[in-house]
Length: 489
Image 1: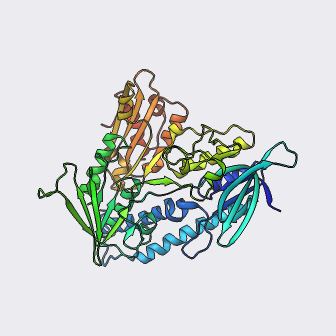
Image 2: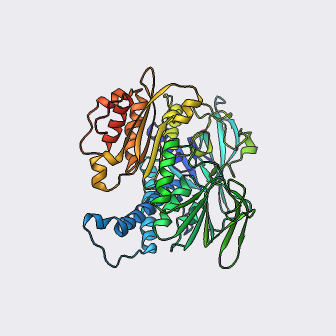
Image 3: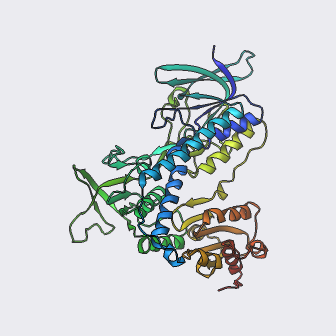
């Protein structure tokens, strides 16, 4: 006889395991089904984020930044380092320990909250009436290798995440042509590294390996750089990444072919003008390793979409309403597999909201105040609308901006690149967007999110006392600048 639960969560990434825990906290019997296995073939909870995404990438980025500081920045502090070297296998070992700690921690959290955990691919089979005939019960097949089990649940939360988008002419083998998994597992820095895609993953991976000694060239198909970010932030980022960090970034690229041989990989492409540097019809980039970072696609493989008539949109996302309900009764979907930004924190909050909705509460996620962060150096973060979006919508706005160069804490850190920009409604002064590039802005953006969630005006931030000396003073001065009364510039 099948085991029966109030809720079955399919996927144990940041959306799934958080949803499962919240369901259990609210008194719902819950099972969390996940098929991820680590390189040793053992179940490993946490999805892409904990296994081959957010957590391992930040661990390696921190290691590479420490090396960069020791090699190029410590001398300004009077610290001399002799015989400096980098041991990438040790970096990888440290990263692996962090990942193991967190994935094991998720397993402990599920157990602590009395969430049943099943390993395998969860497939929706059918819905039928329960014994009372008053409620539909879903049947889910859980297949793990040759073993198959079936569970029943009154409610389903789909949190199957996303997978790397592939290119038909560049099959990933994670030996020479890499996706994010392979990019986070190299044991030495390739002399020449190519990256296709200048989005979040491409920039973070390119920055990581550039610091560790690779010559990095990033090719981006879009005509502009970081088009999702504020235009001025993107311009500043490109300047710093190319002039100071040493990344080679080309936009408006059209790849015509990728060829491999025993020694190298050759990418053939045309630039924005359709010509090569020498007037030829195509340019060639020869590299030792190539990272494919052209985005991610929703993961519905094995879910049984066809079995039950689960509706997808034309891009492959599961269609949901504002409460993450699908077209099927009592079936919800959250995270990367539905509309909205593919961000771990967005998935988690949707998971919480759905759990609370199922339990009869009022769950809510405001997609307009989801913060974005790119963990390059300097970091980039934003929330709300940028100037290009406001202009396109015909919204009248005021802007205030302040540079980190004029901030005492940034000077002490030796990290003075970048700025903070505050955009506010021209009439009401309500904050419409806040954009940052600079040191530790991944932490600073939280104040901006709180301000927007409480419908603050720029004057509200301007009148809040910020500690001195702190990086947060840059946000304070930018808010003052909206009314043209910044003090220190």
